[in-house]
Image 1 (cartoon, rainbow, N blue to C red):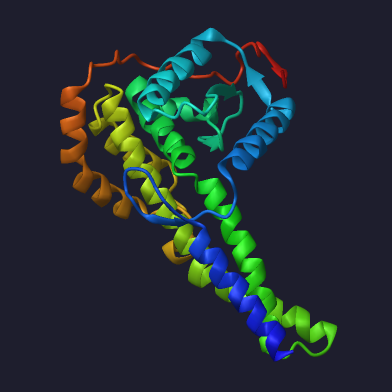
Image 2 (cartoon, helix red, strand yellow):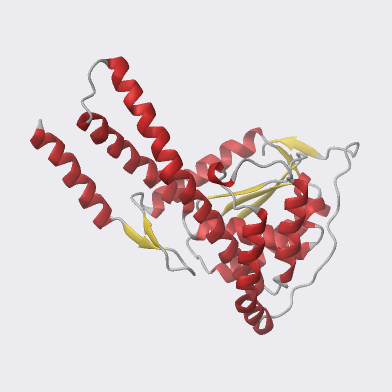
Length: 279
C-alpha cells in the first residue's frame, strides 16, 4: 500500500515537471497538462453547442462593431493558429466570454456599460487575454491535478467506509477550493485585465477607456461576495491595478495607429428580434 501511495506522488511530480509553461506578457509560470490542440478542439465544440442554443443577434448595428473591434484585437494578439470568431447573443446580461482557440461572444446587455468601441475593446481585450493565456486549459489542468491530489490525499487519510471516504473528499475539496482554486482564478482575471489592457492599446484604443469601463461595472455590480470567495478582483483592486499598468499601456497606444471610436447601440427591450436560435 505504501509503495502504491509513493507511486501516485511520483506520477504527480513528473506531471508537474513536464507540464510547465509560461503565460504571454506576464511570463507567469503555468501548469498546462492539456495539449493546446486539444484545448482548441474542445473550445470549438463548446462554442458550437452554446451558439446552437443561444438567441444569436444578426443585426449589423450590433455585430459589425463587435467584429471590427474583435478583429483589431485579434490581429495584435498574433495567434495564427487561432480561428477567431465573434458572435453577439441577444440577452440582457452584462457578460462576454472567450473559449479556447479564439471563440468569443458578447451579450447585448453589455453594450450600455461598454458605451463605445473603446469600452468594447477593453471587454474584448480582456476576453482575448483569457484565450491567449490559455486560462481554460490551465483550469482543466488544475482539475486533472486536483483529482490526483484528492485521490492520494484520501488514501493517505485512511478512507475507511464509503461514507467516510465521501466526507474526506468533500473536506479536501472544500479546502482545495478556498486555498487554491479560487485564488488562482482571481490571478487569471487580473492577468486577463493586464493582457487586455496591452492588447487594446496596441490595437489603437485609448487604455484609459478600460478604467472607465471597470468603474461602470463596479457601479453596476454593487452586491458582491467577499473577495475571498470571488473569482473576480474587487473593483478597488482592479482600479489600482489598472492605474499601475496605464503608463506601459499608454506607451503602446502612442506607437499604434489610432482606431476609430464610435458610440455603441443599445438594445431596446421591445425591439424587433432579428435573431434566431443558433446558426
